[in-house]
Image (cartoon, rainbow, N blue to C red):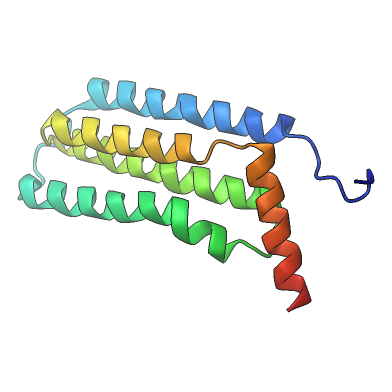
Length: 140
């Protein structure tokens, strides 16, 4: 493999991955500090179920749909979109905590967001697979 066709290193993707993983923890800490500050939010049980359902869909989309949608983009771009989607799941939990919902919903959404984030771990194999999909879609 020549240096021109070899995918670039994973230093930047690993740095982004690690930094955004820390953000999940920070969102959980903020959720504990801000829990219940806005207690006038109607039916929180229904909202909790809805946001958790949306969180499951977004987490699955991070792993399954984003690689398909971003196959024409650079690997780093696709990774950032996957990580942002995973992070948004945790943000749903933060929103519920701020509205005063039970913390179990926040914990569940944070765990789901972290799992989606871990599934997006940047590896050379993942990067090479993305580059193959990208070159295949350009030839079509």
